[in-house]
Image (tube, rainbow, N blue to C red; front, side, top):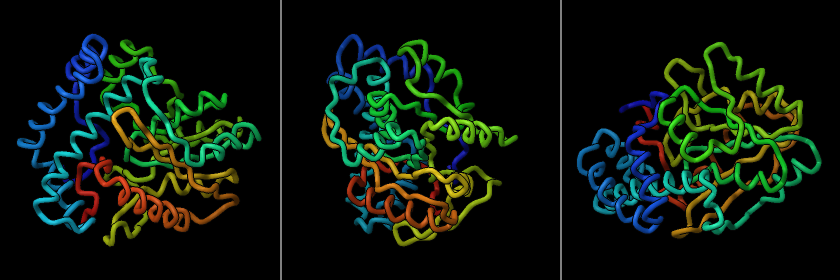
Length: 288
């Protein structure tokens, strides 16, 4: 896969197995069984692995052997994060320990009723932010391509009780822009990813890990348009049941999309260097 198609790999049967293992055999067994799945992807999914290899080899400057070892580690952490997401959605969140770094920024958005835009990316487990927000009483809206794998999402919703946040689906008729505007006018929180785009979409160029890459124009144009606090948020796995949540200092006022992108890319660069195995874009991110 040389570019992102707007869909994620996986099927309902696979999710069912992991949900079954987690509920009946425990998290430890589920993590252990995950090694068999990871080994399969490591050996037979070079179409994805080659882009992770490029990320380590050219982006982070690792040697070829260290890059190969970290491909396996990336698949394994990615699998753990998926299991953790299902566990959290199932109400097993008390098992996880969450360290807050900047959570007061989100709390202020809720308590001061300013609303806000949270820009994240496909790194770590960003969905822990939605669980964190529930404790503050804030309404969280996540902007995503909700049409992808509806059967899988339906299965997870039926099995775990559904998502803990609202979804604003991205559509070709740009109706999502009106829903985002409505949420912000209601002083709600809007979380949007700033690292992926689909072919044909308008993009901006940014220098990420020393190489030029393209980023979606939409998230930064939307953030630039609305005069609400904006912050970059991330959740990274730091231990078996440990996570660290990060929210950067809020950006206020209206800034050009290009300037917001520069700030976003700088922060993303810093985070992937700190948590290199939690970069989950398995395609040609630096498409030439």
